[in-house]
Image (tube, rainbow, N blue to C red; front, top):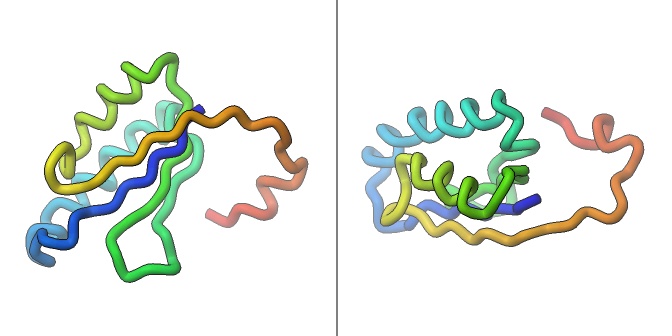
Length: 99
């Protein structure tokens, strides 16, 4: 499993961000519906355009190919990728996490 922190670079214009964000949304919907993005959303404690994706792919290379499809990739956002091995998952995760 992977945790991906994405932060759009602050030097892109608001106009450019407004143009690209709907394309970005379609990208993450595609992989959410395919079951490779398990949970995602924006950070709410910052004004930066940033968020997190929990992903499950067959390999790091597969994940890399998916990230390369994002309209912000490679120069308009920072992508921090961390591999994660969940050891405990709360039984009520579906009730705690609100979509």
